[in-house]
Image 1 (cartoon, rainbow over the protein chains, first blue to last red):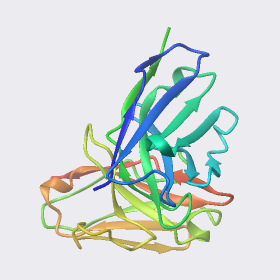
Image 2 (image 1 turned 90 degrees about the vertical axis):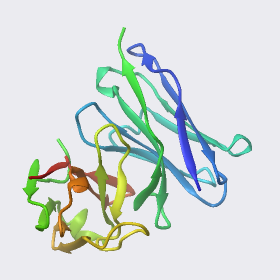
Image 3 (image 1 turned 135 degrees about the vertical axis):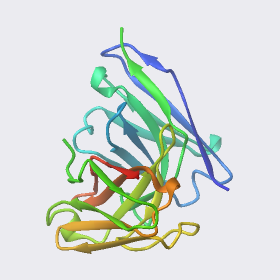
Length: 121
Length: 110
């Protein structure tokens, strides 16, 4: 059964870069799949961050595109998220997800358990 | 502010049916059959309940159903059970490879 596990610092300083890793187990991150990230600020709704295809093609939320980089390391079965110039508004639970339905932006299953990242000095 | 509009709350008694709406535009819900619904219990990751407007993933009870009319999608939960109490989010593909979510609806089982 495919499982996704996020990891990374729980506290990031404003203006710095947030970096998270998602480890894929029970499957391969390079098996012609899409992989992605979704976040949820505390007490608020969900926001799609972006998706990467196994070829390296990326798709990003237009509102975050200038600050986001999603990459994949197939040898480690991992994908990564980098978000630059963070502010308190980037404080959220970050979820690793697998987009389903044959393209970047249909539905998402499974989800990782999520990791809370707080932006504060 | 979310791109898709959901009522903040909904409620029903055990055994009853409740419908949650999700309103968008012709650039998202109205333009594509890529609407999905997610259930989220407190402190847990979301779980997909409906995808592509009305399809149910394996393991999701048939009490959950989805539909769409114009720019509005709906999730109906029939035969409400206590465990259905949760937050529900709609999602839709939007033009130019984008994904939008609703603000969420808190479903209370009375």
